[in-house]
Length: 129
Image (cartoon, rainbow, N blue to C red):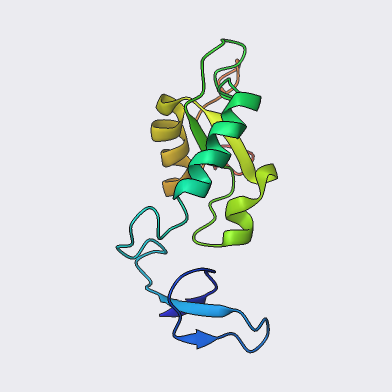
């Protein structure tokens, strides 16, 4: 088990460096069988998400095609870090297709799927480059 700061959740210890509460997070993942509201996706998130989608209504990955965005995605996975979770500079608007396919594949593999018009992978760390 590692310790990770997650404000607003039941605590088992106070962090000596920050003075903030910490909780146990299992190696299996930060979600740890908690509800979406317990992970930060409650009413406050729903309001922030709706506001963001009104300001950024199109999927950033569908460009130049104009596809409505339905998901506010965290560019860098927050894994329970509430500072990163609420950082709007870490948000992007995606359609459900891109969020559930491209983004999920990237998070699982660490490789950006896709290639440019010459067939060269777009991920700078791809093993072909």
